[in-house]
Amino acid sequence: MLTDKTVVLGISGGIAAYKAADIASKLTQAGARVEVIMTEAATRFITPLTLRSLTGRPVVTTMWELASEFSIEHVALAEAADIVVIAPATANIVAKIATGMADDMLTCTVLATKAPVVVAPAMNVNMWENPVTQDNLARLRARGFTIVDPTYGRLASGKIGLGRLAETETIIGTVKQVLGRNGDLAGKRIVVTAGGTQEPIDPVRHISNRSSGKMGYALAEAARDRGAMVSLITGPVSLPEPVGMEIVHVRTAAEMKAAVAKATAQADALVMAAAVADYRPKEVAPTKIKKDSAGLTLELVRTPDILAEVAGNFVRVGFAAESENVVANARQKLEKKQLDIIIANDITAVDSGFDVDTNRVIIIGREGEEEKLPLLTKREVADRILDRVVELLNRG
Ligand code: CTP
Image (cartoon, rainbow, N blue to C red; front, top):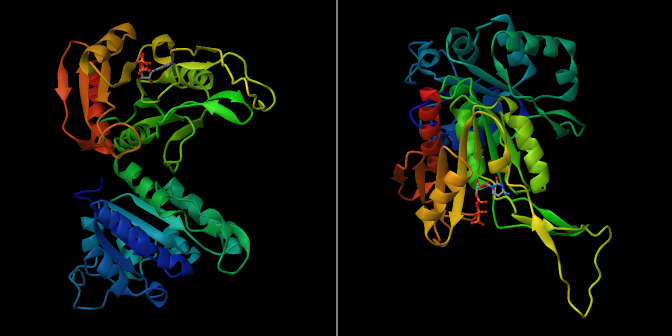
């Protein structure tokens, strides 16, 4: 969440400026106070009124106007900013800030601020590929600016190439990561698993479960936003890929086990939110199984228990999805798998469990302590779990 954060959103004059409205809107929805600065060229593409309406804040377009709240002190926004984001950044603005120019409110603010700066370029592919632009970006990177690279696709010129402004989610994810880099998990390596595994029956069929991956993804993002280096090991899910972390896609329990073993070789904590299939078909048919009036019997064998079998010295967090005797069953799993914490949830409740954005869980610790949380969003649950992980890590 970006509550209490002041985000200065700089918009420069390219056709992608219209996308800045979406960024301003989503930043505001995430709780940030968004202060927009537009270059004169940006106002040719999108009106200050649009940004003002979305952010509920005055929009700065010039250094010379007395009506604006920030017009007197030209570095006021530079000082107020927790972070400055320039999206879209044209080749021109990149060149100006790389050389320290300060001839308008946006460049002045960038030069004067001590806050981190995120730059999301968008431009014509030839401008992007021009070595002078690449040199300028390299200079900015070397000075600690974070560059959100443009993506490949159709550009305004009709050409296909690199130069499209990164997606809003990518830019906002980067903002959260940069803001959180000195958080209480800074320097820690956290491995999170998410989603259900799929155990193939034949080339077109598999056994799986209803896990959406939402709890695991929320945990991975929350850990990232607190400064952790995150490895997210995910089964097939239909969620957008979060930015700012290593993502390993797996399908089966066996693949997940191998990925977890590799990622935990250096980890401080493992959070197993994945719903690993407990059984897999003994044989995978090499060709599609044809239907038969006699029916079909599958022989199933156990998959590896990843959490119980993974070796290493790190904080271990497991989940227990239960439909009865929730706490007692969860405690048993905590003991059996030698966990530090287990998160128990009752999957029969409609507001927690599969494919919803909320969860109602009980956090159970090794010493038997129980923390019963109210109904929270999965992101809030994630942060409460990570509070406990931080405590354990600090205890050493
Ligand atoms: N887990 C695992 N490997 C498996 C199965 C589960 O690592 N093959 C992990 C899950 O990610 C979760 C915890 O173990 O963190 C859940 O334990 P488990 O006993 O497998 O729970 P259920 O599958 O719910 O067990 P049961 O079906 O026996 O209730």
